[in-house]
Length: 361
Image (cartoon, rainbow, N blue to C red; front, top):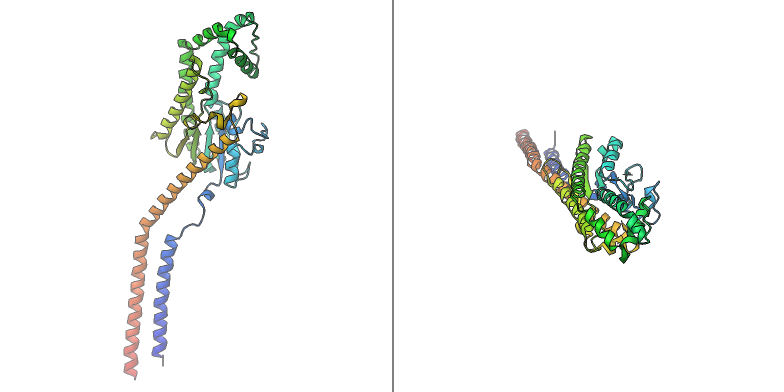
């Protein structure tokens, strides 16, 4: 004879098991992944110019960008625990304009682009400097004989020589008249049109970059660093105003593209043009006639990126949780039905057992 007490214990155990099953199922639905947001960044690719390469920083090596530890790119590599050349890639090149960066992007390994969680692009500054240098080169060349008559040596043989020439000319009070003519030359229609075309070409290039990245199947967060204006402390003349205007327009174009319906998906902007405007002496090496960011400037850029990457990941996680919670009621309903059926069956067994037991006794 089966003991009534034994049957009752079996039934109660079954009910308790179903209860535990229900709690366990609910816990599984609500359980957090337990991963830190930063762990969701498992691969980063960087493209761009001398800023993202870490030019002029301590230990900078044009053949090994990983050595300049203070570079914002390397700060990110360390922050996210990535490995240089395996999960972190820096394709930057000093002197590259947006045309060059686009070419580098297209020639990079597509799997790296596709697998990257974050892609950072620093470009635009050399677009402006290249067209300004060309305009200045032509203007200085036309005035070179007049400068020599004043005892000023004009050397246009290289970029470094041009920089020294500019410094010597702009600091010489005897050079005012030829300088005025150079400045006037840089404001003529032809030069100004080339400046406007530079901004339009930059906009076209960054659109092409975004399109190409998405064509690889990449879902990466794309961050553009706008160039800042290193001349904003130098007073005002036609050349400086033109530089500021181009850089301002490039920044505005970048923000506009990132907000557009066609190119804005997963695209973000670090507006260094605005951010650095009042901090040039703090975050750059302008005191030593170097326009590049110093280690404090790179630290600030890295902090900007980390903050925004975290914010985007947080929003993504919140969205995923909300989506998951939408399906929870349906899962719970099925569990509750099964639990109810189990309880009903258990109750029926208990009642049947009690009736059978009483009849036999």
